[in-house]
Length: 73
Image (cartoon, rainbow, N blue to C red; front, side, top):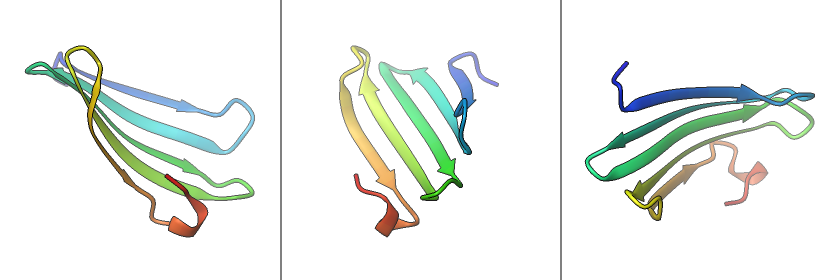
């Protein structure tokens, strides 16, 4: 794994949700690329990418929700 990349995973303490996030810093940009899923009472899956400049100001975002009627962005 490259030094400028961190993989972060977590799950809910008391629920069925989890998230896998790749955080990467390079060339004056920080990006977070993630997938989150939950199989609880209202199941959902969402993929998002957020790009920030070196000062952590958002410069781009992309959000996709395969089950669109269960998500709002």
